[in-house]
Image 1: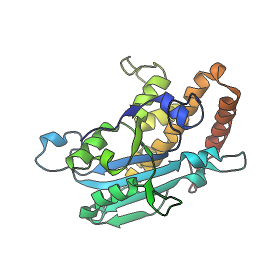
Image 2 (image 1 turned 180 degrees about the vertical axis):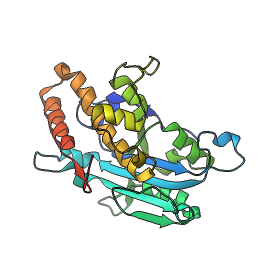
Image 3 (image 1 turned 180 degrees about the horizontal axis):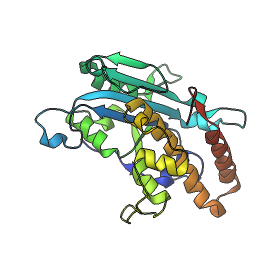
Image 4 (image 1 turned 90 degrees about the vertical axis):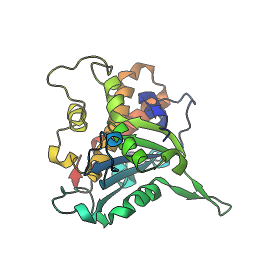
Amino acid sequence: MKEPKMGGSKHLERLLGLREDGVLSTDAVFVSLDLECDTDRHRPSLSTQKPIISQFGIAILDTRDICSLSKSSGLASLVTVRMFQSKESMKGAREYVFAQTTAITQHRIVDTIIKSLRIIEKSSTGTNALRNIVLVGHSFKSDLDVLGAHGLDIASIAPVLTTVDTHVASRFVLPPFHPNLPLNSRQSFKLSGVLAQLDRLQDRSEFHNAGNAALYTLRLMLLLAIKSGENRQAELSETESKNLAMLSDAVSKILWFGHLL
């Protein structure tokens, strides 16, 4: 499986209107993806069996909708989030906070992932075209390895503009500003740890659920883009500064699905 091109904080800023240098197309759909597996997801190559995907969570945000934000519009209403759980692993599953869980049979998991990644836009000629997507994940390589073990090549399913790993991006945006530099004893770059640094501490049990994690990762992506923009505030153009202020305001007052993020 050919892994999609990885992007960083600069890619995020461009996609969100915080860096207008024309280097990257801004017409894309953010697709935050998270998997939970019943088998060892970190070593699929060492197992004689494919990792069993028990949960699949996805959160979607269209850059076209972000561009239409105003002071009165709510970012929460622009996010689509779904959670799928295999019927075989429903017992003892952690609660999904943000929406109802859709139970499907195990053999439908991969097809459901494929369908979710193919975001179709009908053209004026009546033909269907696929939107460019930006894949978002936290420590995303293990998820990509699992999908590869199932023979799923994302690049052949949908046009992937770039892939953003919020774990990698956070190591460049937050101190010590590089993945290879040591952390202090109180720092954590797990999803819950980075959110605690930038936002607020969530119930850690919620992160062991694919739907919750997909939505939290999408929120983290937005927070990292805002922080990266703030770090270079003096360099921003007037338009970039306005976009940063608008995005910051929209994210700061999000109440998604009755649960404060």
